[in-house]
Length: 162
Image (cartoon, rainbow, N blue to C red; front, side):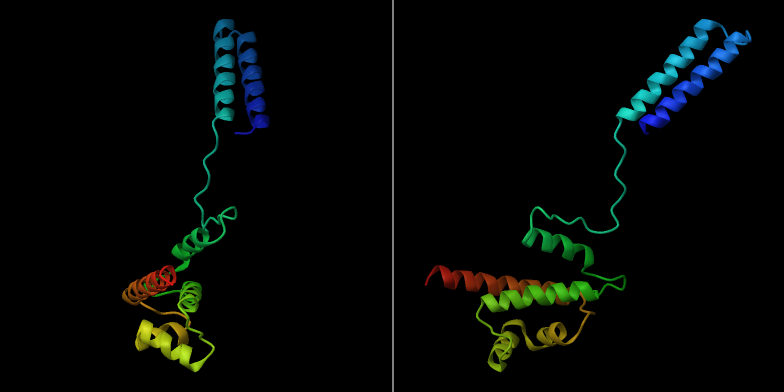
């Protein structure tokens, strides 16, 4: 409740109770009690913070760019209503996969890099991810994330021991 509305309610209550008391329809102590109670209630309502509306879009964590923001956005947009990946979710998965494969030493701009990526991900999964724009099912996404985890773990393990 805004301060302006609270003030208007308090003034309206005071005017109404004063009018009723002046016409002997209400005693003065009752009029003062009603006005005071109305003022107190409106004051309390102005102090209580209003609830935030339910977000309809993902909250962006602009102060924390990077993986946390990517995961937050991906979780909101990954699947469409039919249970397959949406266009934006598929695009994000492709970007994450490309990044992980690049860190693992697969240059996807070359034929040998693409062949290596197919070996790491598996030909059907690679084809689904790289040639389609949406429509991967939940099982394929879980398999992809598992293979990406294996790829990044292997790449990090190799980097640590070199």
